[in-house]
Image (cartoon, rainbow, N blue to C red):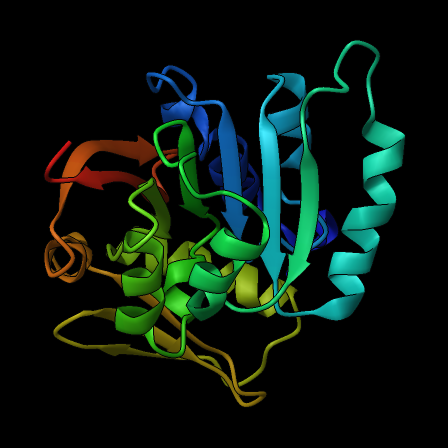
Length: 222
């Protein structure tokens, strides 16, 4: 699904725009990318001189990401640390500790890009783990509208999924496939409610290329 050859024009535009809302976020110097693959937005972070930590469940993708780091190294950029980690979003507490990130929450943003949040097996647990870091949380999701759902179906079909089906639920639009795809486009209110349980508030909402929505949350205590 990370292969650009499978991206429809709409999905490509969405991916190209999805971190734009973070470009002017105050004090932002560290991108923590959840479900990063081999570094979905690593280039974006490097171009802006940001620290970067990527987390993914797939060992092969993590290895590919680590191999990319040497290629992307830039002169005068040695003070920036960039790493990949193998694990799930539910392991964020462990990552935060072992990676020495305690105390860095003010400059960090934890990003769940490319509708990663819609594929979480236990979203309450994963988002709760993210909230315990006290960093800002950015969630980029497909919109739950009919046009966006049509774009999702076209994209999933290009990825090779068969027998695609949609189900409208109280939390959002669920797409499933014969191969086991299970991906939600959550209603924004559902994500707001989930983060509110961890005392997070919605700080910024952004439209993403007419296909997605970017939601930036911050601890209510500021």
